[in-house]
Image (cartoon, rainbow, N blue to C red):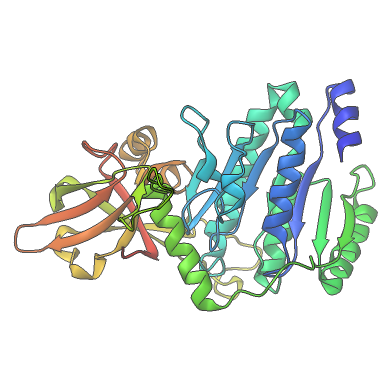
Amino acid sequence: LDSNNNTANSKTAQGPRILLAGPTDCGKSSLARVLTAYAVKLGRSPLLVDLDSSQNMLSVPGTLAAIPVSSDIISADCYCTSSVLSGVSHGAMMPLVLWYGSQDITSHPDLYKAQLQKLGSAIDERLSGEAEASASGVIVNASGCIEDVGYEYLLHAIDAFQINVVLVLGHDRLYSMLGTHFRAEAEKNQAREAPKLIKLPRSGGVVSRDASFRRASRSQCIKRYFYGNSISPKPAADGSVSAVTPHYQFSPCLIEVPFDDVQIHKLSNISLSASLLPISAKQSTDPIQLTTIASSEITPKFQHSVLAVCHPSSAEKYERSGSARDLYLAGVAGFVVVEKVDVDKGLLSLLSPCAGSLPSRNLLVGDIFWME
C-alpha cells in the first residue's frame, strides 16, 4: 500500500482507496486504526470513513462519518477506546457526519445508499484539488452486515468510493462472492480495472462482543461526545489517590427550548415495489420522506432521544426548497439529547455540548436513545 502511495505521489495520481469488509467482530475497526496510524507515521493524511452506524468510531451511533486524519488526531488515548476522536486536540478538523438515525443499517436501504453516494462525491470533491491528500488515499471501514442487503451495500460502497483495494477479513464465502462479481464486471467493462481483492485471516486477538457489551459501548460513545474523557485525579504528596468523583474534559449545558421554536423531523422510507409500477417505469417521488412532528405530537416518549442539529446552511436551503435531501444529505452541526419533555409548559430540556442557542431550529430524530 505504501508503494502505491509513493507511485501516486510521483505521478500526482490517486492513492489507494481501501475498503475493509467482513462479518462483525472480525477486526475491521482495529485494522482501520492500524492502517491509519501507519499512514500518518509515514507522513500521509488519509481520509478515514466509517460506514458502521451501530459502532461508529468517528461520531455517535446512528451516523456515517468521514475525516482527514493527521497527527493532531492520532494519539495513544484514542486507541484505548472505541472512538478515534477521543484524542482530538483543539483546532483539529472535525468529521463530516451524516445522520442515518438508526443502529440497524437495513432499516432504510434507500437512505443508506444515498448517504454512501453523498460521502463518496464529497470525498471526490475534496481530493480533486489536493494532490497530496489524493495520494494519501482513503480507508473505509464497512459495516459487519454482509448478507442480502448488506452485500448490496458493499457493492454500492465500492462504486461510490471508487475502491481499488478490498480487504476481506475472516470470511471465505464473501471473498469468493466478491471475486466472482469483480470478474463478471471486468468482462462487461474491460476498460475499468477491477479492485484488487485480498483475503486476510480473522485477527487472533478479536473476541465476540455480546449485545450488552455493544449497548454499553454505544452509551459510552455518546457520553464521550458530551463529556469527553475522564480526567484522573492527581495523587497526593504521599502517593495516595483520594476516591473522588471523576472529572471530565467538557461540561455540557442544559437548555430549555419551547416546542414552537424547533422543528423535529423524522426520516422514513417509502419505496414502491416494481410490481406496483408500470412496466419499465421508475418511482418518480423521493423514496426518502421527511415527516415534521407537530408541537401537539411532542410527548414524553421523546425523552432520552438523541437529536441531530442540522447545519444552518442546510437548514436555509431546506426552508427555501422544501426538499428533504437538503437535510439528510448534509453534514449535521452536532447533537443534543432530550432530558425532559414538559408538555404543560411546552418546553424541551436539551443536553447540549455548549451553552447558547441552537445553530438551527431543524432537528432530526431517529431511534437512538441515551440515558445518563
